[in-house]
Image (cartoon, rainbow, N blue to C red; front, side, top):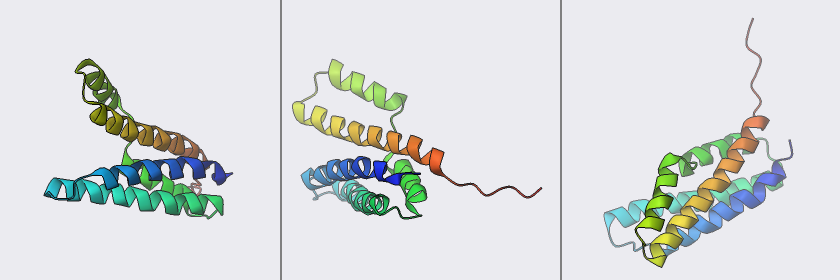
Length: 125
């Protein structure tokens, strides 16, 4: 499998979540916990992106774990988009929600690519 196609998706996710982590107020417990989530995604995205570029063997499994950590778009995401549009949320809320959704869409693409690349050992017969 050509894992290099994962590199731009992982780097884009990393950049989006890195920006969101830097934009958070780190003065409350909620902000710190959410910031740690964003920081974890930032670091993992960079590491997996670089690993994909050099075609490391561990990349498909690590990318699958990151996709689960970030979350992929669901009907809840679609409901969030509808809510942001219909309730005329502030531009900052719309932008941050859009960035999270774009990162989740990147991870959905990664998930589809990686599931095709996973090697499952033959079952004992």
